[in-house]
Length: 296
Ligand SMILES: [Fe+2]
View 1 (cartoon, rainbow, N blue to C red):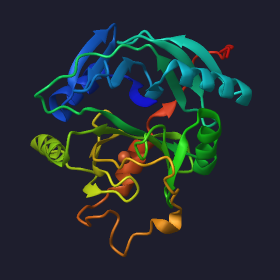
View 2 (cartoon, helix red, strand yellow; view 1 turned 45 degrees about the vertical axis):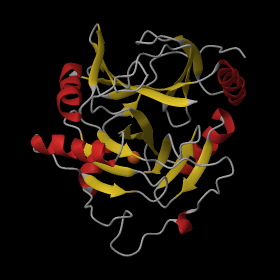
View 3 (cartoon, rainbow, N blue to C red; view 1 turned 90 degrees about the horizontal axis):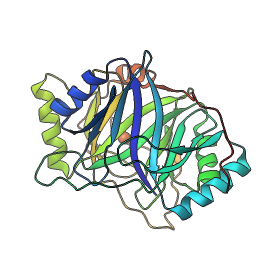
View 4 (cartoon, protein in one colour; view 1 turned 60 degrees about the vertical axis):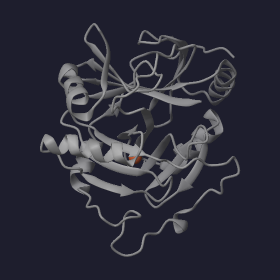
């Protein structure tokens, strides 16, 4: 199973796409109606969709999976009684599968048969999304729920987060202990640390400084630089997230305590806690579809 894309709704999709293309450094994939699709250098047809809406919300976060994985998901989701429905993607790459609403409202989409595209060589683009993190009223319960129903695995727990994986990457999602439910941030996988630093340079050219970073995290050990996008959400350049074995020992908050004056491995970054929190509250979740039998 792989994290593939996130589908956002917002009032100015063209403006958001222009920022992500010209400053953040993505490539345009396609425009369908009012929806702008942006891609990276990897084989996914797009990583981010911006559709036009009066309000800001997350339509879905999409995972690519196998038919066997989808079959297991159908069974367990139906057994759990979570709101879900069959879906056929009308986004680039198409494919079909299911939409499901998690207990705190996050909408995940699982697709099989979505087509890949030819990777792009020789350009300084994000490769793919590496994680999408959600704020949760009860992150612990969300972690248990996705383990039990989706077959994801908790990799680490910290004072602030429950990190969850769906393959051998340390985390593809996480639930932040926020006390409310919303999009926390979207992280783009860069080729290497130099690509992260060049990204910071591109944003510096536009007078934009990281809201947090650069730095290197504890859990997952990935390098990061977080920004508050002009169109609202928190977005991250990231690279080198740890690969973990099946028997990875799940870390507890007591395993991840920083020394004084440190909130990352390098100790060089400041964090705009207040600005990040405001941005993290902007994009909520919205289910504008009715549940329907998903079969199994
Ligand atoms: Fe992140």
